[in-house]
Length: 370
Ligand code: UD1
Image (cartoon, rainbow, N blue to C red):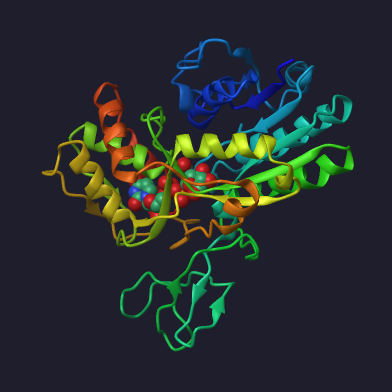
């Protein structure tokens, strides 16, 4: 008989794509989701969940809802989380409650109803600054972002002021938790990898880089940068770029992320492991802003450089995918330009409320941009 997978937060952006992929992979799929207003715009019915998914409305902090959701399932993918790095720095109680208490409630229920495997969505944000190499070739694991350098550079530098060069970050790099969001993601990851084996279950954590693709919450001003930029451009406004826009990220298509979760649900070698999931290609925020405007046929819209940094943000972090390739069998397949074209075509059909200015004011009022 087909196995049943519970996806917490499964009505969200990654969850809907994963639900589709899991159905196609032969799973029965159950989703537990509270449809938070910031993401789902106040709807009571989940939009875009594929036919055949069993939907349960409920909050991960609610033990009764969770107990119902875990009953009879074989595997769990735990995606339910608050996801804004900037917002986590002031909505502290909400982030800690949903992300960490929510994971605690999940495991409390799993003690009663153990499953075969639990896969948790962790984040590259737990690394803080990624791995860097110095002039002498030495690797720097514990880079901290200081104030802006005397030359106006945002890049971390060595003691002599020479910029360090970002290199792909492997899973062994020590975490450096630079935001409330990162702290909560690390706790989720550790709870999973500690509690699953203690109760005879298999635990796996995926450290995701910046997921993008059709179905992102365009009207959520606290979501990922590509969705925010798409919403701005769609409304004829320039994307606002923090720092100088030269910060590096890895943008991974949501279909690749969904595939990584399916592998993490099945692969025997994955048990107990943490895996970086990205596209293997890094880009600056400036580059993605320009490429996206072009994909949306709005080359006339030039990004605006804010010249200030958001508290909790890191400068550069790019993934080393060697472990995911070797042990998970993960190989990113989606081409970035094709992905942007697909995103642009989808955005053109959407209505997106631009609430970015409000969100920026929330940060400014609390001194969280400087
Ligand atoms: C994002 C996700 C986080 C996920 C992580 C994995 C969100 C809100 N955050 O964090 O959940 O775990 O990826 O990699 O989805 N930027 C601008 N202008 C804007 C918004 C952002 O310049 O309007 C910049 C930021 O300062 C940052 C970069 O874009 O330098 C990426 O920001 P963001 O999309 O929030 O991603 P992460 O912080 O990397």
